[in-house]
Length: 159
Figure 1 (tube, rainbow, N blue to C red):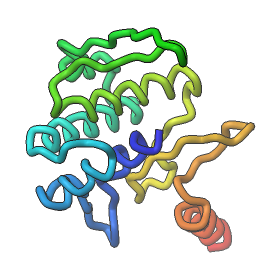
Figure 2: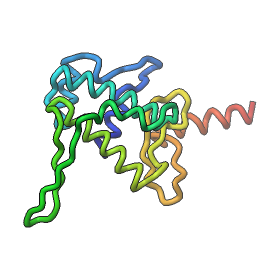
Figure 3: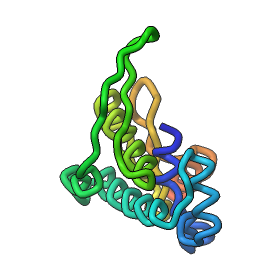
Figure 4: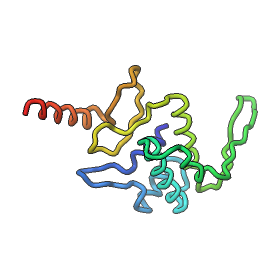
């Protein structure tokens, strides 16, 4: 699940400018390897595509059907062993990490529907996974975005 959020949040706005962690091949390779990928250029291209599709889906700009091209030819193969049932992913090597991230998104949507969402701060591009009991978290960071938004509203009320 951390890899899912890391991918969704790999294009933040910093000082008003977008910083894409996957745009530079060297930085992108490092990001992919740190998250269990091979860091190939093909994998980076697929990670960027997966990120953009998932961002649109979570932001309700596209339907989950947009994931279908990323999943064509992918198989999950069950293997029963002494420790229980294990699922093996059968896909091209460069597609393994992006497909695992899509599966993590699907699992999140199934187990925690509606809890993965964009930050409510319109000047922020990050996403959050609301783990609160009340499901009312709105900001990626209460210390940064939440505080800014509350200060902005207070300023507007007192103006």
